[in-house]
Image (cartoon, rainbow, N blue to C red; front, side, top):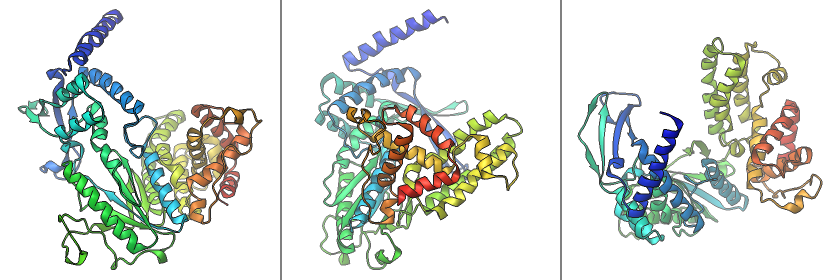
Length: 499
């Protein structure tokens, strides 16, 4: 098939099928049939729960879905419909932004002398239990009407799926609930469904969401007040979930009480949070509703958050993941050259090291040392170096950044993206203070992103003049600058930023 033929087919698809579908408000029925492939996850092969259903949709449907999704997201962005505290599936937002928002609010609350706790909600199969009539009503209320609403209604109606195992295919069954799995439109439609949860009015509380991963942060002057507000907030959220036919998994829903020290933690036997399923209640003493589990740490969007924001559990987890890669490189180093090994290192190891490192990378040195040793162990295996090989020489030969240098790099780049460009600043020759650092009264706040990032960015801008650069240019220039610094120079740079 020649290039001209492919171009002709593409034009037919775009100008005929897609345009007619959008003009008539009809989504082709053949595009709405999904084939589900069960993928074994591990454990007992006879248990249905140990298989992950992967839904495969027709390739041509993705073209039409992408056109619809582009128009829908443009409409949502133009009219500022999605809540700002919803970070999921949105351009320019990521899981790192959601985690950073949560941690910033916790640190600010503790810095202001308040008590705070966070409830981490676990929704049972949220994407698969979306009510289509509720979703369509939400979309109409947001201003999506006429042919636009009609095509989305047709898109969600009369969908079928079958299961395929090897060469055996089951009969097709209708899909009555949920947004289509494996689709392009599904995530955006789910954001519309859950948007009113993000804007729910909760006094002295904040909601932070990434799709269905939801955290509720509650603040107060003392622990009794915080727990009372938390119980009230949870009751309102549970009522919203009930009204929208979503289910809260109480066994996996946990909460963490945050404090600077162990002494200021509330007694476990004194306070608890009840998930009230009763219609009315006047006293928790006469209520038999279940309590949710209190935890010292929990995993939120891939990051372990603990009660003291020490990042002890997060660093332990990352260290273990990096050490598991030693075996991979032991086998791979005999079959690949060093450039290939570096590419694998970037993909498998450095991606793990840099995930949210701008948030947890300011942890105390004693927690970071095991991770630094794990990184060096991987590099020594890659380069066939002995156990006691010089650290400085190792990084120089590999031309790779240390864990601490990765923290500096990612922190500066993240700060660079968040800065609003001001032409007046560029007229000053390497302005020393592009951003003003916040004052901090505690060591916890001093190690937080908001404080450390300002100091690091100002120093980097003084030496590298990064303010007028794009993100990629900034990252490249700061990387070169950091590669020229020794281990001790990097440590001193971070110490000065934390002081």
